[in-house]
Image 1 (tube, rainbow, N blue to C red):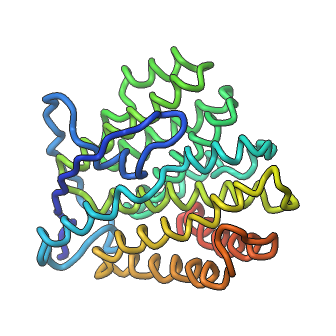
Image 2: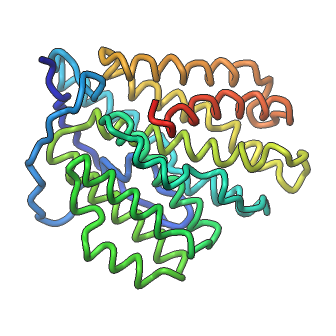
Amino acid sequence: MCSIIRIKVKTTLMAKKYSVYIPGVIAFFVLAACGNDTPNKETVSPVDSSAVLMDSAVNTIAAADKVEMVISDIPFPFEILENLHSSHVAYDPKVMNPVGNVAKYNQYNSKALNLGIYGADLAYVVTNEQFQQIGPFVKNAKKLAEDLNIPFAFNKEMMDKYSKFKNNKDSLTKVVYDSYSQVDKTLKGDERVGIAALVVTGSWLEGLYLSTKTFITAAKTPENSDLYKTIGGQKQSLTVVIRLLEEYKKDAYISALITDLKEITSVYDNVTDNERMNEQELANIHQKVEKLRNRIVEGL
């Protein structure tokens, strides 16, 4: 029987201003721990062989060092979604992962990826100040976190904060950040970096999906050219995501996920200038991103 990946990561990342940019999606998961909280040491048995498993943790110290090197380069969706909002792209609640899909996630890989996806959806809602829609997405993130044995990320104290600051963008952004910082503490305490890598991937992918999906019909103008540039810049983040996942490529599910992500890379490779991409190049990227993202939200 394979065993869950156990790799401990040290990091010295520091968060920047919450409402604009959190340096690395993994800031949610691998920020330096604050305080003297005792990490939750409970472990949960995987539900099947497609969970984040590997035969042995070979060269785990070297792998941990590589992970630490790349995680700080992965931008959290707040940055790209704030750019989307600033470009006056209309908010569309239909593009987010339907809240009812949470019942489909029965395997660890799906739970972890979609915990990241719902986190990006929360960022999308908060960025657009659609506060009335926050509740269901927080509820789903709470369920998935608890399923992954991360109970304190959305405990009563945290849920009270979501209620207290339900109409304040900056405060809600910080609360989302704090929730996922607790995810970080627990995953670090349990040394489940493989699970964190999947959450990172889901969060990054959803941020790019939301941006390309809602922006796909907008003609390129001088006013929105910065968003094209931001989307083009995601190629670098994609490279980092793949490097992170490749530490766990012995797992069949992650290996297949890497293959799918490399298909997105191949589309980026055909873009003449990532800072000056055109409408057709944007559409090509969106097509590949949508294909992978939709498979993940369906729990496949």
